[in-house]
Figure (cartoon, helix red, strand yellow):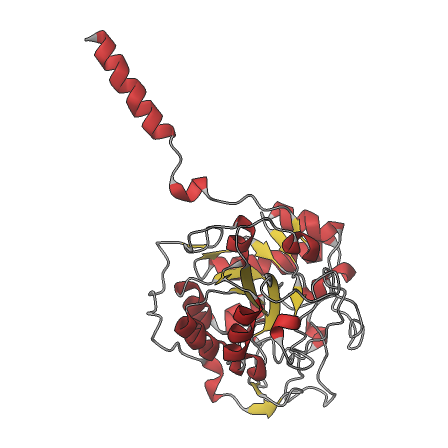
Length: 343
């Protein structure tokens, strides 16, 4: 009888020590995922992760509709102030199973900020996402620029710094062939071998509208499966929801069905032409800085942000490609200068 009890106890103990599937496959990401690291990631198939920076925006709901139509999950690196301004869109992105990462709160050049201000920019965005039930694990620094202080802040908050391996340069113009975007080594992938982490922006209407061509050309170039960044690094054969971005079950807001269009606070706001020919919503003249969307907050509202043309010609980390971003525009009450060009 004693031997039987010991056997039962041993069997139960072994069962308790078997890790759950989610824990067994949870990847341990390095602190910094540079373009070279992303390009050299070991995997059995050509995985492609499409990522969108600077949102959410008024164009993101249409993007989500098309991603659902194609059965593609993406990764969105969001600005904290846009998370606060478009909470319903954030909910819809998360409810659809896409991965959400941090892109700072006001889009500054982190290299120009002290450790304390960098931490504030990152942590305030993490808090904004947690308020929506999202626990991020990734951060993409604006312009791809970071330093040792950024690493310290990211490590303190449990985040991995992610750059990209293929830059679409959609802020400038849409590529003739997305499959021929140069890799970090400066050369495009051979046909049939394409893989990597692609950089796009969901603040540009033309980029969002071009998603069907993006998907078709990436598939023709060799992409066998579209995944999130965390899935890309894990090389998971089973396309389960992202393991490093989870939703809390006790969130206070209702879970929105994927086919229900979210409310868009900016829909009633005036529209003005952006630098790329699209229209972007501007907030009310009396809106507070914390409430302004990324497409309208003046550059001087961000503490320590670079001057208007400070980073216009800076090379991006990971790809060596020049990057600009037209996401920051002056509100109606501000001075009538040309739009900021930032990433």
